[in-house]
Image 1 (cartoon, rainbow, N blue to C red):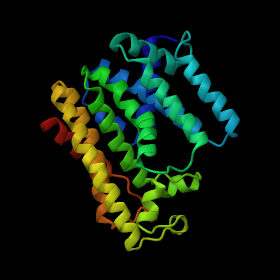
Image 2: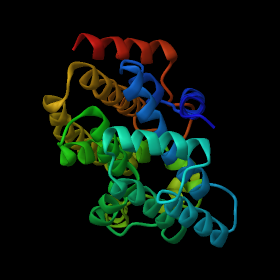
Image 3: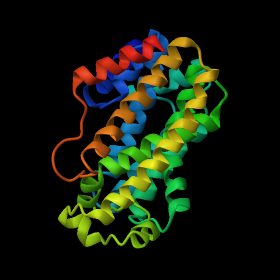
Length: 272
């Protein structure tokens, strides 16, 4: 398969599957947009295996194979596109292997004792995406990119509490659940009481702090890359706003943003 055909495939995947990613990268030049789509496609492949229905041992085998394929001749369209993107933008192997490690962690661990544990996980599954992408943007602010990735993952965790519960996972730190008097039975029942609201308000505050710190990355980016990152941040901030406006009821109804809202945020990013 040609490189152009491989990029076309990962761009189609990104448009079809990405909830927020596809909107943010619209503002990038073609070559950067294609490279970011290749990174997304790899991260998506890892997620699909880790969250799929295969037996755990088969998941682990497939994830390990994905990691090994990063160092092998590319045949699969996603790997063809990713190999070209890595050669063009010097995307390091480390964060891509971190993504695989995060997927493997999901096959081994479904509870997190405290935020230090959760932060390590978030850095693998989301901070790593930021670190990989920042090479494409043309910045060396790796820490800012990682922090921003963690912020977005913290918002995902808040939004997806029910979905994660159905997968047998609770990402909210266990010590914080205890401190706020929230039991897992309340998550199972989708109960939104004062304890739950207080716990989630604390989670929201931490996510916003990470978001603001991570946005320091913008100072090192060219205008179009900054518009892309601003769009990502704006989309996730709008999701967090919606969670808060609903009194932290993440159990009942959709929290997805409308296409109109997403396009408005894209416009704001361009006008930044």
